[in-house]
Amino acid sequence: MKWVLAEHDAGAVSRLSDQAGIHPLIARLMLARGVADAAAALSFLSSDLTTLSNPLIFRGMDTAVARIHEALSARQKIVVFGDYDVDGVTGAALLYLMLRDLGADVDCYIPDRMTEGYGLNTGALRKLQGSGARLVITVDCGISAVNEAEAARSLGIDLIITDHHESAAVQGNGSVPAGERLPNALAVIHPRILQPDTTDDIKVSVGWLTGVGVAFKLAQALLDAPADDERLKKYLDLVTLGTVADMGRITGENRVLVRHGLDILSSDPASLRPGIAALKQVAGLNGKRVNVGNVGFNLAPRINASGRLEKADTAFRLMTTDSPDEAARLAVQLDTVNRERQVVEEGIWGTARELCLQADLASTGAFILSSEDWHPGVIGIVASRIVDEFYRPAALISVKDGVGKGSARSIPGFDLYQGLTACSDLLLGFGGHKYAAGLSVAADHIPRFRERLSAAVLDQFGAAGFVRTITIDSPVGFDELTFDLMRDIERMAPFGQGNPEPRFGAKGLEVQSIRPVGNNKHLKLRFRQQNGQSFDAIAYNKGASIGSWLMNGARVAAVFTPRINTWNGMTNIELDIKDIKIEKEKNK
Image (cartoon, rainbow, N blue to C red; front, top):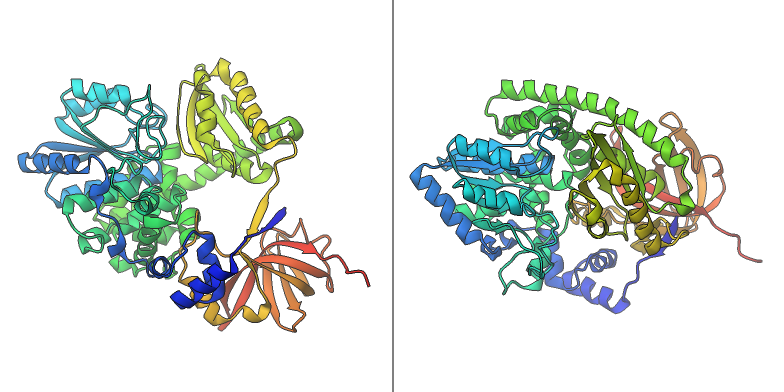
């Protein structure tokens, strides 16, 4: 792994530290995250909901709000059209609950992954028209539904699209390039389609909103209220679940929403919505402070399991039920389905990993794997695991009746959406983001797709260019790692995409002790720096990689994240080790 030390202008660090009254290390972290002045730094640390933008900066928002109020007044049936992943389910639940509170005649429709696939489809629109729907509002889908928007018009349905996905028709400034067009809907609400006078700072701040985040902005506009209004704050648990699960960047407005949402998720069970309380119960999180990791690894997979193996209706009902008894039953059901998902995932992972091990890495830019035996609801997770282990973009494709449905994931430096765009003539359809996307492809086009995408990756990186890097925010001395500094670091939370946990580097460390823990998967260590100060450390999942050569007395350099650890009533600072290298002895 290549270590890269972040560059900092010493003068800028000093000015920001003095003007904002923050520790120089915190100033370095701020500058690395693009926060360069005192006002922005203090706003970042406060994460005040009142700093969120006016939702009317979204083009089409005023039209959408007027049409929804018209439907409310006329008691017209409104249908929220969601998606089967966590972002889509939570966003649909948010709008459904808010419209229900406003007295709407509202229903929700989430397509079946297996029979309908992702997004709007004409068959569903016909069903909704037959049920009396006059207004359909999409959540987390629709930005590419040009044909479906025309179908809605022909059926007499007004369509409001809320989405955040990439589209050839959406540029960074919201303009539509020649030859492309947006769906001809009543309104298209998207974080890249903003009013022309929107400032660059706000464009960046809202640009990474996920589907549920866009739904929240619509709710804010409907209520014509500031984001700290209690009628809106109560939905921040849903916003947090969807944003974190969808790998939304924890920057700008996402960061503010998630920070307050985590507070709600950490509340006493009696104050939570029944579905969230039941979900925390089955995930073993009752009585614990919920962080981004808990959402991503404990809560989100259970919500996702419903849409992966069955229908997402179960997860939607869990998010919207008022009954604790029903919530408990549904949470147990999702927990059971999640265990089934894990079994299916392990089977696919074993096969896919073996195929990767057999490949010639020097000539492989991307892994494009396909099978008729793979469940389409799980392949995205396995694609992520391939990326983690082999550090190559990966797409897994489930083939049925001559058509493949695939999920793709990427690595830093390769824009997956642009890569798929370059292969669009070989695909039946695709959509997604820079790092994650879905696609459909005729089975006989898979070899050509594999060859072209892999070649595009190799052209960009070169055969020897796939090098994992880790960025070190700043070197530190052990004497700088104090509880006061740790409290300042905690103010920078929540951490996640775009706002990673701080990584520090230290040299001249002597290994005082080392022992394997957790069935030899992890290592428990203690380091002493030359100044005589020592810290305990933990190296997760590194028992095999460094446990075989690291010994007591070794002189090393380490990259780590410091954490406050409480065990058996004792609180100390522990180092979470990211990488270790033996230091070369200096010539005497």
